[in-house]
Image 1 (tube, one colour):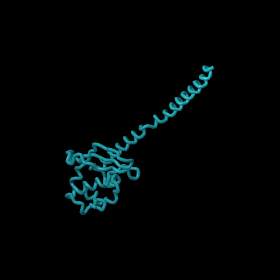
Image 2 (cartoon, helix red, strand yellow):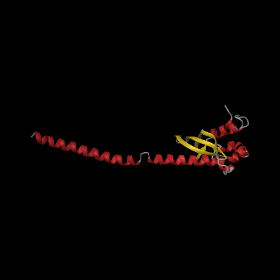
Image 3 (cartoon, helix red, strand yellow):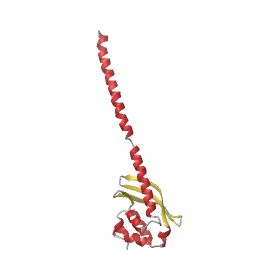
Image 4 (cartoon, helix red, strand yellow):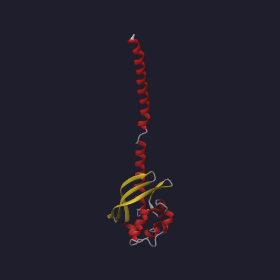
Length: 165
């Protein structure tokens, strides 16, 4: 008799184990397909866009309007960008991005080198990229830091976003 009483108990336990395994198996399938793969490709896409946009912003072949579109708050600093484009430095300067680290969905840290005539002049500079209106752009603070350097280290005469507090 004791033997027969244990059978329903064992069958009940087996059913629970089968149910648990089935639920676990079904539950693990969607979660494994929704793991970081989309985030990784989104991150890779963002890093690629940031790199391309930073290098385009600093490219001598980019027009003023292209640069303004690739700069955070570009219209507010357009006069400064135009002024810098008029310098002989700008006609030979470019940037090479060496590392991009996403710090949030809308910001990234960018490590870059400014090249003049292909020769590294400002190595391993740290800047920011900002996601604005659907585009990764050069952070205005990064532009302002370089504009201040070109202005003898001073922010006087630079647009309001570049003024020291």
